[in-house]
Amino acid sequence: MTRERTVRTLLDRYGRSFADQAGIRLADTPSPLYRLLVLAHLLSARISADVAVAAARELSAAGYRTPRRMLDATWQQRVDALGRGHYRRYDERTATQLGDGARLLLERWHGDLRRLRDEADGAAAGISRLLTEFPGIGPTGADIFLREVQATWPSVAPYADERVRSTARTLRLPHSAAGLATLVPAGELPRLAAALIRAHGHEDELRAA
Image (tube, rainbow, N blue to C red):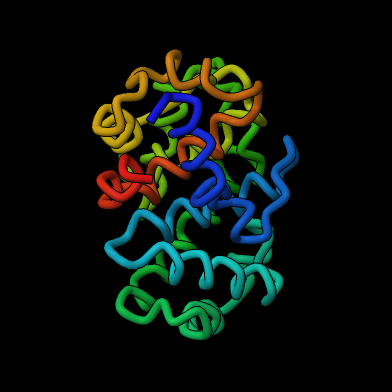
């Protein structure tokens, strides 16, 4: 299979960003950026991506689209929203972390992740380091956020973490962020990155397509 066909198949089968799946229309404004942070938090747990996305949708439907609304919700309200998304294994701990993270974002960056980006001078490594100061956001969660936000924050692009690069390597695609960026139009790398994450474990099937 040619590279072009591999990429086309990846995008056709798996090429929906996680933000889009969660109903987040990304823009360089505080609310969608915060919702992406919450999604990255949920996706980084050892739980299925579909459950994490469903839980993010429930939190949003409950109105917790800003750190202020998240913090003003009771712990039980956060637990209940996570439960409606079937995010039950980690719901109590996550409800606490979401409240604590919302407080940190409000107190340190006035509820605006663009201020965090600016503190890091727009550099991916600096943004990643600051993101891991949020409870429940480790390196994996920071990678998820940066993969998804790169079309909105061009200063971090191109971005592909090791999970993305590993699947790309298996599929004999370029396995650097810059190399992967050459395979898709500008702004489409988040879709390709999400497709490569979802394609992990299906590489033989893709190669046979």
